[in-house]
Amino acid sequence: MRQANAAGGRPIRREVKLTEFEDNALYFAASQAGMTPARFLKESALSRDRGMSVSERHELSTRLHQLQGSLAAIGNNINQLARRANAEEAVTKEISAELTHSLAQVRATMRRIDDALPSLAVSPEEADAT
Image (cartoon, rainbow, N blue to C red; front, side):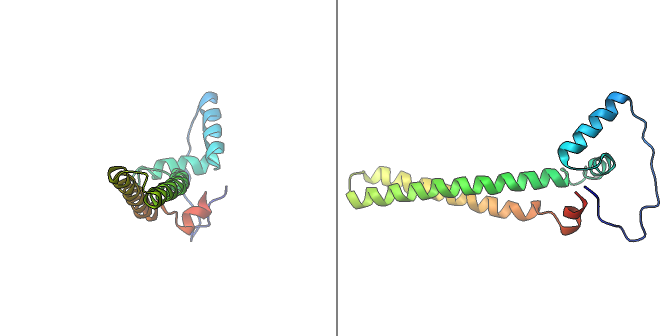
């Protein structure tokens, strides 16, 4: 929950006035994100230029990894069906072509996920800060 030390410390302080309801909402949101309220406020304000916070990027990255695993399983099943269809010659060439096309789409989606993941990577400094 603590953020990494900064060279020279953090000498600047800001004061924020909140109602009791806002304070409770802030503590709840910060705890949901696994951060202190101060860190949550700072992260929320400074992440606007990146489009999402460190915790949001981490969550999205985790979801993409899960999606990639699901797609790999689907692709494996499609590949097994195509092999069986080819071996038994019980499926028309059209169906076999559709299976091959579906497998190609799964592989293309996995490549797009692979391409997207590096942009979501959390630097060691950011990971220490959450």
